[in-house]
Length: 148
Image (cartoon, rainbow, N blue to C red):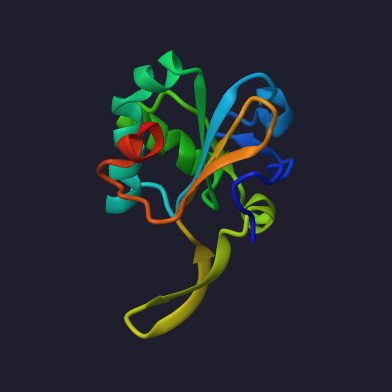
């Protein structure tokens, strides 16, 4: 289980355009790395749009924003176009990044247990150290939780 002060696990994944994104690319920048279950679902859309609407505030404070889910690059492309998202989304179909960050796990819905992405956000400092972890994401006010 990752905690504040830990070194963020290195990762590499492909975004919606097939470009590789790695944690090392963000050395010297602060990074908001958010994990979400599924493109175009109500909660995930609210979260992405809240981050989009506050994107200038993130940039002004020196943050880059990257989302990660199990969806395909094509699904991410459609999600970005439909909601005019200004940040990349990594397609983690094999769940390697999610497992490294401890967000792939057992979930329960309507009495059914299944494995899926646990919604969680990691704020990573310029040196690659986790400076904040948001476990209880408010999808409609997530930017406020991060920028507090």
